Length: 440
Image 1 (cartoon, rainbow, N blue to C red):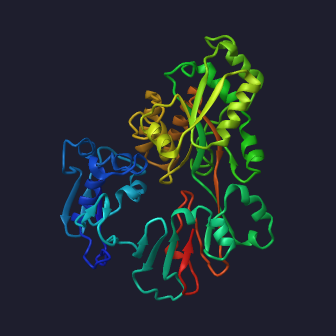
Image 2 (spheres, rainbow, N blue to C red):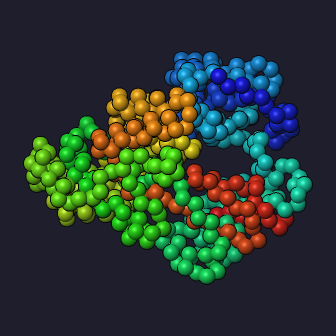
Image 3 (tube, rainbow, N blue to C red):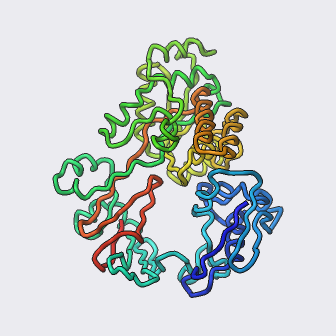
């Protein structure tokens, strides 16, 4: 049970006080079937542990039983069971407090959004620019007073805009990071942040030929994973020996995959029910513009003799297929939405996760996740998460390839620019001359 007390100065941008009733209404709205969130940001993905959340998500209840308004500034939240990472989930997009009384047209505010953060919307031109202004005066005098986000086609090449002096912050594309870091001037302006994220290939275990454990293990053993980080990306990303990136699971990322071993991969094919690579039915891997998956295909065909096709779909079609768990195998880059192993382990592979795109089911895995969620301390929690990760490795349902790293170019007049491991930029903390900051 959690008791949340709102600050007395908490207000929406129109000046209306934020009340406990707004919190309750916002959480209920996020869980409601008509909220319109994509699956990766949905209330059921983040808030399912609140008592009554599943009933609201299913449309069988309109009131969230686990949220009680005690007075104007106090909210009581009851969970169905203890959850060690509930507070990080409560800080997610799905749990943001919104003005539920605002008029909405086609899913968007009919007027300027009535937010509650440190910046208000000054103007928004679709596919062109979003301008924000600081709500409260900056008493220190060295924080950003405004932010302008470039949108649409103009934002597709932020690095070029930075080089032209048109924006102040820009993500460095992977193909340019090497020479930027080698440049004696630009390299001093780069913020490097490893992400709590992983690129991986995931396999369904109920569709031939990937329902054969030996075929899945052969794929794991045949692919030189470290070469992805060291050769394809020139050392600009971190190699992956498991699903969890460094530092997300205590001092260890958990059980690592076995090292690449081509002879062992061929032996695994021989032990499969097919006996030879020629007898293995064609394998299809679905993705969206993914060179790593294409490299995997080439390795499997060249070194194992397997027949592999890569189907690259447009992004909306790829997301729809993931939501329907319809792909026999898929390649995906996933960034954790909150700093917990649960954000990768359960989100991607939990039996009851809305984002499970493989249909993976393992009661032992689910039990380890549940034990981690109720652990009394971090060490015990991490031990259970490590056990869950070991089940994924032993079941051969994943082929992790690399952990991405963000590189952000920063204008020299900016200071205190911080990226988090989940890719968030703390704009309100940036110190700068009193001029608007343009972000690409």
